[in-house]
Image (cartoon, rainbow, N blue to C red; front, side, top):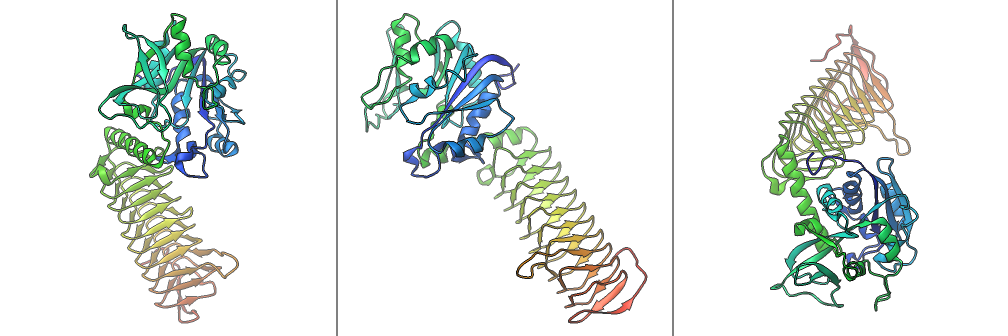
Length: 462
């Protein structure tokens, strides 16, 4: 089993500390809800913990409690929420989880503002504790700034965690072992001692005090070293940007390892829920976000944005935006096109430059040329939509649908004033303004458009 493979730990409980506002963020949004690569940072922490398959995850909420609960609401994880109405420190927050985690023999404590933590590190932490009352994570850094640092005795055992004095910025020439704020505890030992943590001069109860308690009892904490980037705590906008950069690098590396060609990683932006098949190519300047899925052999970019887009196999999308929509196989879009609002584009369709589709279904092999707009419409297979064609779908109060049949040829600058339908195999002349239904096989011209010839339905356009 590799370090990131799931393994069940039925006696493990997890406490995720997510009650603080985060004043350094200078934001009304709770700190733990600021997104990192498309997910609230606390969700990254919950997902890492859930990978261990614990019995239960207790999320401690305080500021913006309802927002945090809504953001994490999912049947995917065994979550309960514990309220900390007054922010009295980490020991107080953990103590409030006692009832929620009463049936757990081991307790993992994590900070909700550390989105780069991995399941592999958490497994190492839980396994390293052994018979000790607690294990903790640290990283070697050029000083620890305002964060706590480990203090060891001459034998290298952890004897306490020193908190930095207020306003201390650290000495960059001094290497320190920075405490990460991630702990694994023997549950019985934790509940016995966490309620006895003394109040600090700041008025809060610090969980770090338990390191000194364990040392005084002759059972010092086990220290687990981690890379500095993995313990990054996000408490201001600069750290948020750094977490985004690091996680994006991980996502890009994972995509390339899975068979995606990324021509210029420095200008390619991925979010955590994006998925690829093999042999996808991402050209420079692409942004892929939300629940985007890209099929095998597709070429995305350059300069393309996909937001929660489902893209089929062997598509080519260049300098365009696709959002909340689905593309079939072998679809060409762009340059400078926009597909949005639940559009469904069939196989082998072609959308030229400056084409826009919204809340519409295009059947297979539809060709939609430049400077056209199709909104709230159903378009049959093999239809040709010439340049400048517009569906006039909004009357100022209500959106109306347009129905266009199979094998239709719409002339340049046709305007279809919804609700209206065009039958299979029909045609319109250039500049036609269609206000009434056109029968199958008919030719309509003029303003307003009138039928000048009716022909048998061919089923296919030119």
